[in-house]
Image 1 (spheres, rainbow, N blue to C red):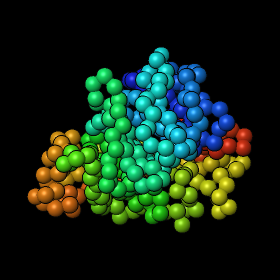
Image 2: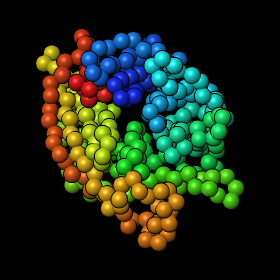
Image 3: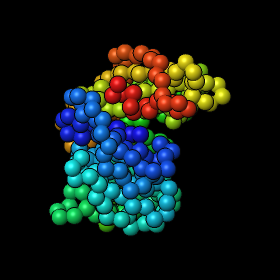
Image 4: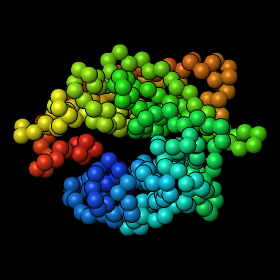
Length: 294
């Protein structure tokens, strides 16, 4: 179950494609009283989920005729978004706050933008000639940096991506640059800790701070049993050479031309890391996202 902030006092949990459930569910958590109630469920159990401008956007990931929905509020619930203009499976998706929408890459190597800034309606825009989104799993958007961050599933290193939908002579195109993050200690080391790539979840906390939650697994790949599941929580800050929040996409494009692609530098600084023993329901490990709100 993925968890998202809904307003100033509520947290919404939604089952997505990684939950492995037969029936879609959602819960609403009151952050003041910690009371949990049932929320309006999404229409599919195969959704990829992202948060954009305080809304939850969902897209089918495992079908050649994907549909999309938006969760506007606890009272308004879910409502449909325009159906994508393609009939391909979505392999990767990402929030795109500058357009209050989604970026998706398909199994045919095409990339599209769901633009929700257009007056009166949302619309899909093809980005011909654009490369696929440059990560395999989950990436989060950090507003203070204007970058998308991921924990590499292969080496546990932190990577930062600069994505910009730039106007072209004909159709717009997705421009991409990867910035090197000085990261002397990996967030996770799969080979030494016996972790799987899916066991780490990156969350942006705001003000340049991030959190990675990693659930331990035994050597056979099964979650730790009777004694509970070891969960490591690491909080760190990313220091940026550019003043956070002040560089527009147009300004970044100008700086690339003037100074080159690698002029910007970022550095990860660990604040603290702790390991907890968490007990899940019988036969199930704990929800990684749920651990964040314990």
